[in-house]
Image (tube, rainbow, N blue to C red; front, side):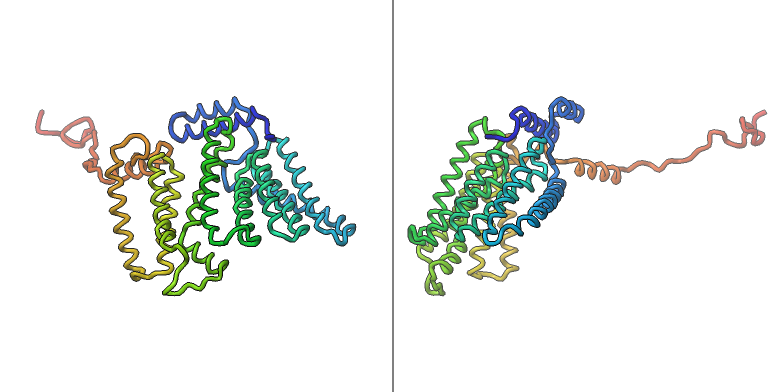
Length: 385
């Protein structure tokens, strides 16, 4: 199913692990170069800016190709013009397979053809059916196919969006169940997807997809929180269920959404510390901040300057307590710096400050050839005969 050679993929991920070990000071630069020289490398770009640049170049190349096709095909096609988008998708897919044979992987050029193939096909489906549900189903199927075959994270994310969109469309547009249950369906779907991905991560044979799995984990955590967030639930209730919320009324089961707006981020923080998982921990911090914003959006307890001061004091106290608990730990979640952190700037600053504060006596210039006294320089006679 995978488009890439297994041994070449293994070499790519071995090189990536070697780079991580080099950043964490476990390998020297010479050892890293030796490892990279011994392995056959795929053509990839680890620098995100270079990858974006080649992505734009690939889009320009693809647009040039389809422009030539459009000049010929638009004269032959009169009514069924949606066919041209399917032809564009075929051209993009063929170009992608050619780039794969040329060993391009996460390079930028292959990303351009990969996304062009998917979006061209989805546009063709949309024009042909004039409905949203077929497009979402095609997004799910194509996303899964491209994510598995080409190990692409964006395709996996598109598949996740398509899956969520299918349930959303069935409930909102086709009335499969009352719209009130939309939030709970989103929460259940997020839980199922998250634990499915966690189960797949345990299989080491899926190591090429670990970065993709992490992205889907973050997306499912955010989906689970946003499904229960008070601001999201209230806005959707007003737009989908035509509820008029005033000072004397609120959304159904409002106390549940009020509580989960803060309980879910705290639960994420607890799990992140317990599981020693940075992704869950950072997601908990982000959702907690959004939870405060959600309540602040509707209720103004204090002026904004008071809120900022009180929040700063609370965050400082919370950070101090956490630091006191973690500063002596040497494993798991600790306050010790990561080995892959770049401390060179800090060390250089410390060295400069040390040199600036060092107290050294001012040098005195003396001439070893003193004049006078009848010495070697003959500067005159002294008192001795």
